[in-house]
Length: 416
Image 1 (cartoon, one colour):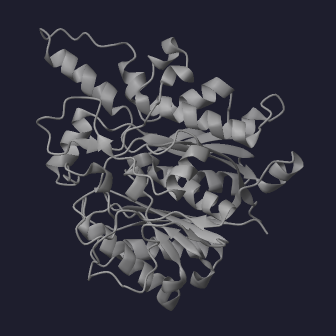
Image 2: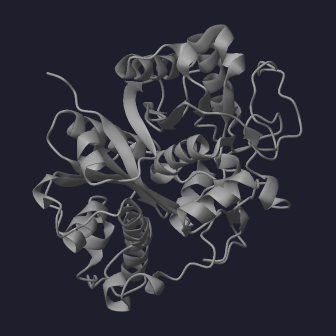
Image 3: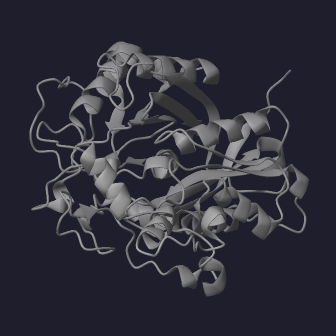
């Protein structure tokens, strides 16, 4: 069976450094940090008092207040990003065959704030189970694609992938395969997360996963720097319209890039720690290249998982050197989490958007906040430090890994 070609025809982004895809790109290229003191709750007793929250975002500018109250933030974010991507793709919803349009979404946690608030409300009462009737539908991770499909009438495959921080990369790979195999013509894919809550921050602090650089939040996310001390939690959403090539061509759609492959693997090692030798990461990148039919030397740019954790950053770069050999030093490697923080289940989506826009604009966003060389990192690797670099990016890879050893990788290519 001949696989169908798949292209990207629409993008939408709601991030801590920009509330549209264009604002997001400007934030990336300018090296903007999205980290700042938390405004959502009193952080006095928390070890980490900052995060990458959305800025100047009012959901009622996009969704009716009554409808918004029925959604957790993660689902609201999904709706906003998906609507931008659908509009960007210029899909004619009156002409498209909605039976062949799917929504495959990623969320690592889902409605955490809803769950947290309902349980706290119950615990503070007299024991009578007075729960909001929207508690369950607001909380469940699959409600985001459900809401998107209900709004637009999309009747193709509709579900959420949950693989921690790899969730939206998994969703994109599933979307790619759905179109490749002829099951759908168009898939709205991506991911969203809204975990900047007392439960989210408290839980990650308990694991010693977060940076505690409270005196300088804007510099706390510092992938590859020797003084990195954990990741910075972010929130938001990214959406991509994947479309069968002939379908896109027939309607005269703008094509950003071709989605040419993906890979999956497991570390099979530890609940939260990466394999120190990056065995699973080596496997996922090799799987991705094989799936795309490419050689290592074809890749120009890699947006790493690069969370700014002591173990993870080194393991990933070792894996890149293993897979790409001497060509690794010719690749523009970066971590946009230095600017956006870690959006968990939405990370793969916004980072895929970053590499696609890097192709379009001929510019690779920087890894900001780097000041101290880590002797465990190969000095010959080009980590695109502190300043964006011009580069004609023809093939780009986006890496995303999650707790539980989940590894996912997606490849994009300039259209021939």
